[in-house]
Image (tube, rainbow, N blue to C red; front, top):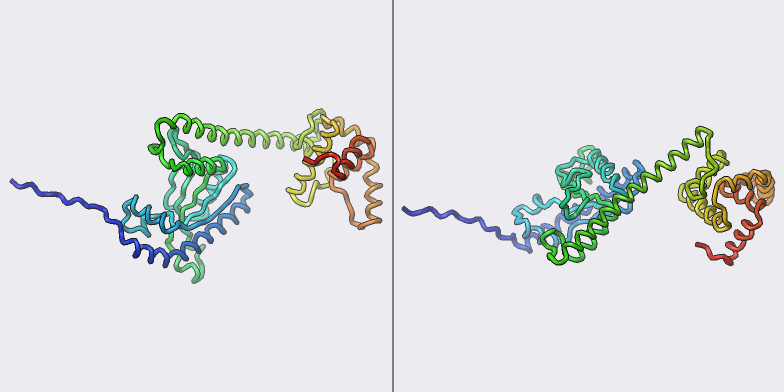
Length: 339
């Protein structure tokens, strides 16, 4: 009896030149989609007040695209390879992964997710990057400029800044998969990966502790139970200024306010102040100079002149403590080196 031979379906890569011609024809569309995706995501991230490190779009270079065709043995590459167009979002904390993941699901049609948000397998090599394959929703494609973008897929990759650093270094070493790592290097390699993971986790813990501290300080202000016997630091000084000068802001923007308070904290600690109570005792003795100096500035500059809370405190401290005035003058002249 003669046995029938089963034909083996060997993969033969498609002609490279033909694929290149088609790639170059479609590349402008993928570039347009990538830029559109980045614009939509960036706008929504700002709207939801999610702090990120960066957002960047790209399209896969042809050589990388063709190598993937060969590796995946893809017969229909423009359909089967789903990351020709991509956007990477690098966030600050692991908890942001979930917020951004929910945002992506709200914005787009999600075809595939490589990992559930927050799910980090114990043996995971790339320990917390999440990949979404998405398309635009129909309501986002109004007008003829979107006609050719319908059904085109885009990969949105979300990772923390430390995951991004880990991926960059490990890929530089050409280790993209667990099996790539030589046995002699695995112990140190995984120990290093663990350090990145621990750092990611502890940045999250620090953020949570900071938010809890700020919340408690704010509650004490609102309940009129602000405690002065606290150490002087950036957070307590910020809360003190809100409590002591409730009708004055610390700066025109959040960034300006942070910079102003941080520098004042530096000056105060340089002089030797350790607690809020020490400051408050000085300010209570000289609070009258605020109005006096404001009136003087109004005559010299503008009738609308008004000190920020930081400026009001600095005026009081100059009047109350000659050491503070001396250090501030020396900083201005460059005698004491600014940090």
